[in-house]
Structure formats: C-alpha cells, structure tokens
Amino acid sequence: MKSFLHVLAALGLGVAFAGSAAAQGEDEGGTPHYPLKKPVEQSWSFSGPFGTYDKGQLQRGFKVYREVCASCHSLDLVAFRTLEDLGYTDEQVRAIAAEYEVEDGPDDAGEMFMRPAVPSDYFPSAFANPEQAAASNNGAVPPDFSLMAKARAAERGFPTFIFDVFTQYAEGGVDYSYSLLTGYEEPPQGLEIPEGTYYNPYFLSGPSLAMAPPLADGLVSYDDGSPETVDQYSRDVSAFLMWAAEPHLESRKQMGFTVMIFLIVFGGLVYLTKRKIWSEVH
Image (cartoon, rainbow, N blue to C red; front, side):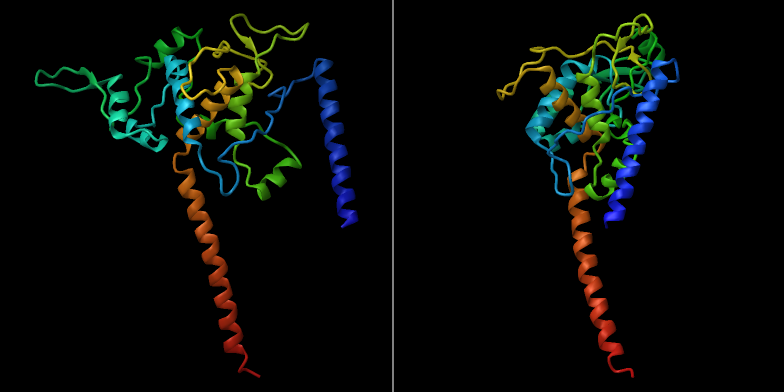
C-alpha cells in the first residue's frame, strides 16, 4: 500500500512538473493549452448517485435563460410541455408557450404562417437561419443550448479522472458553464486578443470569445428572495442547462440504484444455489 502511494505521489509530482513546464513553454512563446484555467468543481444538488434537481433553482435558471440568453441561444430540442418537470402547472406551461410564435402550415392557400406556440411545440430560435445569427453576433453563430451542459467539458487530466470513476462525477459541462459565465477578466498585460472578442481564461477554444459578458448584478429579478448577483445567475442558469440536456437524470439514477440492488440480490441467490448444488458433489 505504501509503495502504491509513493507511486501516486511520484506521478503527481510528474504531472505538476509537466504543468509547470507547459506554463513555462507558454511564457516563452510555446503553444498554449486551452482552457487556460480549469473549471472549479462546484456543489450541485444533482451531484452524486442520489442527487436530484432543485426545482426552485431550475425555475430561476429558466427565467435567466428567457430574459438574457434566449435573445441569442436556442433550445431546439426542448419542448414546452417538459417545463412541467420544473414545477409549472399545465396552465402556466400553456401561458409560457403562448408568448412565443412558431411557423406552421401550409394553409389552404399553400402559405406558411405564424401562430402562438402550444405545449407540444419546441422553443423557437431567435434567428431565421445560421447566417442571420452570425451577422447579428460578430460573425459567430451562437450555439444551441439544448445539450450544452453535456457537450462542453474541460478535460480533468490525470489522476483526477481516475477518482471521477468512483465519485461518479458527471458535472464537467455544468461546471464549465458556470466558470465561463463568471470568468470574464481583463486580459493580462502583453496578451493581444482579436478585436470584438472578450478575454475569458475558462473558454475551451481560445483566450477569448465573441460573446460579451451576458450577466450583471441586478439584471434579473427573483421572486423568491435569492441573491440577484452574477454568481447566483450563473449557478441557476447552468443548473437549468443541465436539466435541458438531461431531463430524466433523476429517473436514471433511481433506475440505476434499483438495478444495483437487483444485481446484488441476484448474485447472492446464484451463490447460494451454487453452494446447494455442489455441496452434494464429492
């Protein structure tokens, strides 16, 4: 056991040395590795094998999305009817859907037309096509948010990813979203970033991105008394994006627990059956 710990310690020193060498290489003009800062693991109600969504937080996050993010980012794979999972009633879902318009048709004259959305519809995009989206956002098409929390995550590297197997860490994407939203900074002296972009060391694809800091203290009003700060907004909307990407997370974990109990009981019965059968064989 002691020798194993010594090996881990040596590997840890090796990783630290490699990281130091990489950082030194960047200072000397080497190729930088993104993100420049790794997202910090956060505490979420849905973490771990028994985690569940906080519906109050999801409703706050949905409000942040509607009032801030929806002007650029779509939710193409999320239907209005699924908002009932957030604690909204059927009447509230219908009222929310009616605030949006979707294209339908053709009508009797063969023309497409716009109508108020119903619960079975999906969230419409803010732009008619990707070209319009790019023209309105400094040439960059805002990504769809439907699967963002599962599609974006920084590599955690060795030996962290080994521990993730045992802790069942699966919140890399939501940790990244939170870190990105709260991570805007002034670029360090001597670092030049493209014009029209904003420095963020947590961005996966470079030192800066086209999206300006979207949140500010007091930007969205909460009805439940929660802090109206950038940190709280970022945490709430990140949790909402996790729900959008995996709305059946709770049922998946419940099913997984049930399966594990079944396998343990089944394994015990198989073992007892084996002993019963072979006990009579000499």
